[in-house]
Length: 135
Image (cartoon, rainbow, N blue to C red; front, side, top):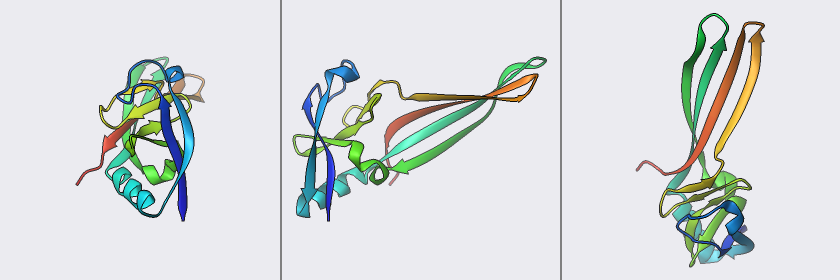
């Protein structure tokens, strides 16, 4: 079995600049290179912290709840990238996360709003971060 990932071809591997400053090309890994890469990404997770806010006519705006969830990087292999032969981060279309520095550039937040009734609107703000997996 082989996997296709990205190789950083332009931009600072430590995470400076803007997402537009970076370029990637797809590469295929198989055999020992594939196993080595999968072992490297197993040390990381994508952490999603979601805050649920309520905006009520009578009570105002307040934080109602917070949730945290994790995704394995094997779920997003096509967005993982390497630099100098090692895992360097995850490059989504609007955000790049860097493993070596923990930095991210671009917009890692998503927003969702919906009306509960004519006096209340709920909002969810999710923030994605690349983190080390607990040992």
